[in-house]
Image 1 (tube, rainbow, N blue to C red):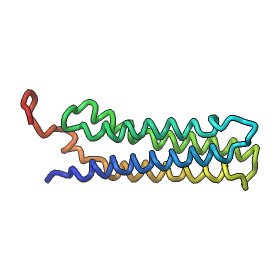
Image 2 (image 1 turned 90 degrees about the horizontal axis):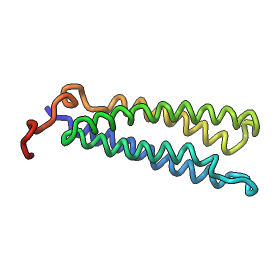
Image 3 (image 1 turned 120 degrees about the horizontal axis):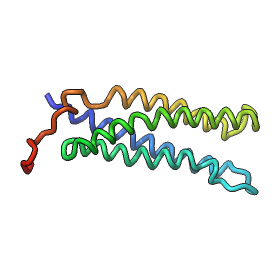
Image 4 (image 1 turned 135 degrees about the vertical axis):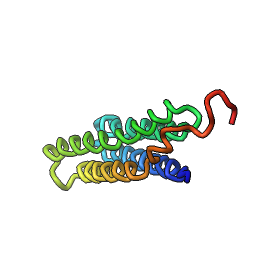
Length: 143
């Protein structure tokens, strides 16, 4: 039984998280001190958002080009985990400066926890090993 829905769910989760990170970047930009550039606060979520969106779309190519699909799946799994760690680290640094009530600290904490949940959800919904191992069409055929 084919489970193509898992691949679509994997991609959907990745794209929704990318949009959530994009929203977090816009909120981080908004809460920046007017005398400072907001790019420093928005850079990490923007980079993670773009990378995850690309990897999520690459995962859909597994049936046409296995190597690109596998790169998309594996990087799509690693990016939320690395992002959660990086956002938690950045949140800890901001906590030392701004204190617990800062909107940026709260936003970074929520984004880090969400990244850990997205990693777990993507790990559970990745395609089974049997489906990842063999493409639909035989090599050299048009399908």
